Image (cartoon, rainbow, N blue to C red; front, side, top):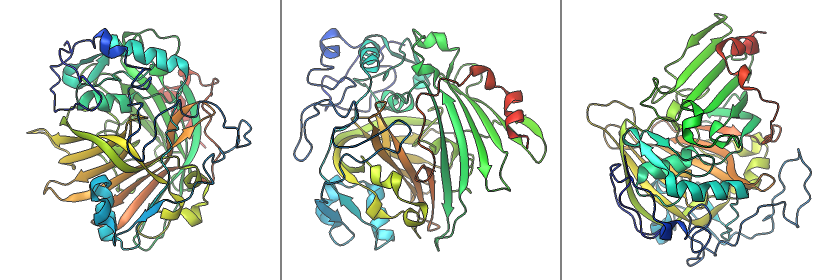
Amino acid sequence: MKRTTLLVSALVFGALGTSALAAVPDAQVNRLGNDLTPIGAEKAGEGDIPAWTGGLSTVPSNVTYKPGDRLPDPFASDPIKYTITSANAAQYANVLTDGHKALMKAYPDYKLNVYPSRRSCAYPDRVYAATKTNAQIGELTGGGSGVSKAIMGFPFPIPNNAYEIMWNHTLRYRSFKLTRQFAAAPVTRGGDYTLNIVQDEAILQWSDPSKKAAEDLNNISLYYIANTIAPAREAGNVILVYEALNATLNGGRQAWQYSPGTRRVRRAPNISYDNPGTNSDGLSTSDAFDGYNGALDRYDWSVIDKKPMIIPVNNYKAESTKYKDYVKPLHLNQDAIRYELQRTWNFEAKLRPNTRHVYARRVYHNHEDAWEVSVAELYDGRGQLWRVQEVQELQRYQVPLCGTATEAVYDLQSGRYLALGMQNEEPPVNYAADELDPSRYTPNAIRQLGVR
């Protein structure tokens, strides 16, 4: 398929179909690094949103950081500009997501502390260079279910449709090899929870500097292993995923699971779509992890608009707050979370006819400086807002990349929520895990990992 139309400016939008698939003309490509940032966001400021001047690409001079440390907050002295509550939400209605409006309505003490807007996102020069090349050659395949020719950087920095925007999220730069330990907490309405501690690691083939094009990846964009290490009753459960770059080829995603109860490795086709997410206690789906992951083929995707919205970014404080002070009844401790006015791409996914998923409609708000899902509204089959997702972002200036601090999924129908990806008390993420060996990413290897 060839893309034959394009967005002539970053503010032009539409529900363009995936038949619009031609290379971006040179005049548009050359906007990258000029009036657009190297990854396609608008450089110019807008109201309270400042101009992008390069972001934080190295350790800031106002913090002291050593490799292996938790990241100090370079914006710790910023004052709260204003706080949005249910009492004054109407005043800010145009910049509030429907998800945040619903949380304020459901929980009277829910609030958003809004700070000065800081455009801190930055990436390595090699990612910028690859992104510019991708703008010229990247193509959607399989009706939007895959990507071809592009590699390393953001595949569609000047997007034509919502499929390309979501692929920018899916393939955004998160380094080549990484390891981390994180906690997940399914929280009851009364605030009780048991922490699930997970050691996970990934080899993101898309970001392998030795690869020259998507066709070099054997249709595997990343290898992923997650090993649950606590609590004791869950310890030793391991999952292995080969994520497909094109869900219509070779059976799409491949997954396996090792259970210490059976001491067997089994194929796990259920680690996909709307099956309950691992360690989520049924509060989220497999394809909602990381904001969204996996195949796009069960939905029709379309752009709504692009405009300034209040979203959670630069969340250094959230990542350093102790669990007991962070995980609270009904919702996370909102005093630990930083919100800013930033431009977002807003788009939706509607379930295709004769296709099943527990979410009939999903609305996404992606931060333009990171192409990352920031907030999402998830609707049930009756058209009722069921769950609200929030991804707290921060700039990993030591890499550099815009990454995730914590994710939360709020279930408005049960009053419960899931906090996941928390690294508040875990070792900092290792974004240079060169020791990771692809030969470990086999079903037999995860059996050895899970055996205790």
